[in-house]
Image (tube, rainbow over all chains, first blue to last red; front, side, top):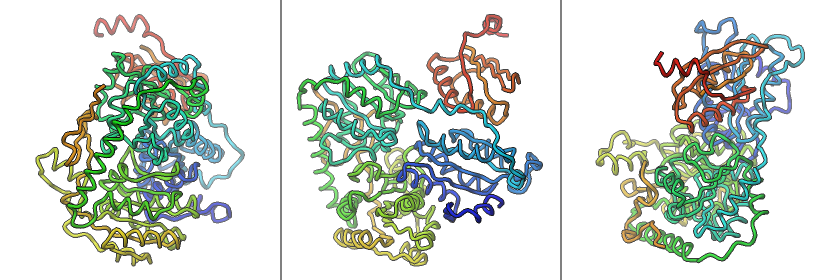
Length: 549
Length: 86
């Protein structure tokens, strides 16, 4: 209360009141990813603070800078189960870069300053400052010194000998692959990744967060790899003899499992170069041939400076990858004809045609997100925002609001699912209240489709707790918040609607009916499988992702 | 392996250290905390794969409140005690 009362007298703090603290935290993530700097999210003690936890965990998993300020009961109540008392420091400890409970008013300013600074320094992440009520009311007498070591977040320079080894590996490789993670985006290393790939004539593959870093119209970009990656990207990673992995934590979602990779690296069949700003990521899941602890852009620049024009490589590997792409797109074109209503990937193509390249696209979590991973084309770095590491349903709407807050001049399109929508749509109240229009496209298959897919394939088709027997009328929900809506009957109508909303900077809810019985996201590398064990769509039965060289 | 850490004197920070240690695949043989020179000195003897101990140290070193961190082989008396199952 006292903190907000003080904010009443400060003109340059814009307070945006979300309808739920989780929404505020996701909005802070959306803001940070567009603005490139942290947003501050504040909540009261107890339930307010615990409602932030999902958003903070999401930010932690995806390395997003967010600073949280929580209220706390008075210090004399600590441990006595006072009204709305929660040990938020204890709760937030494993999901933050730094937490601090202010015990003296002199600590408040430096604590918030440090929390803000740390959240963006080095590998970004969330921080939290807890303010007990009695401390907020105490008289302030200057600033205390908070003893911590911030300098450890300043990335070290890459070691010359490691860079030289990396260059040698890349030059000697027959099938080098560049793997771009989310760290490429935060480091601003897109240009360097493209330059390196072009010099090596090597395919670029990304993780799901790394998808936002690479323009998809670049001919060497194969797409994201992994559980629901592009088949050509899975093929590239699985058959590379050298991988330079940049700003990625080697997630099981990208690699399926690590055994094959680790064995190949150990035997020398694959040479692995891992560049990451976070020392603890090097060797965490896979022990690389060369590990470089440094900022991604700095390290890549040094690699490029040392690298002469690369020797010509056989174009066969790339040609094989392009052929896999062609076969996949042909198969999906045929599959679309079997849908009575909309085919998810064709929806994405129609929306992409209507949205300008600079439009920021946000997704919810579920089947629609996986279709977006495979099919959404990113043209400008930083314009694709998703909850990758934690996979938080309900992320889409609040993160879209945060993205719009960060840059009101850019259109924002949220690709959402009916399940995700129903988790956080209460935040639609902010659209008219703060003038934050965005296009909300609901992939409406009346089910938790991705969970259903697992039940179909992995649990003998025993479907339980995945179907919505009765969904609300999403357009009427929009109407209640003063937002227009449509339920299109053709791709053309859908495209026109998105164009209209974007052109007029108007909010719009588009309810797109998807055939739930046909909505199976393929390719799919089942959890714990290796990339070449991918399940491909009908029509690709003769395609193998094992390269014959 | 013995890991020594110096942090500001706050149990909140001790909690942060413990939260990382509990997720490492190591066995903690001994853990001591002593307040000295306005800081807490934590000494832990841990057993486990070298890679895992390396990961644990790197993770602990990421905490901004960790002012110093070092590793040494466990003290001989402790090593003997460990061998003898005491």
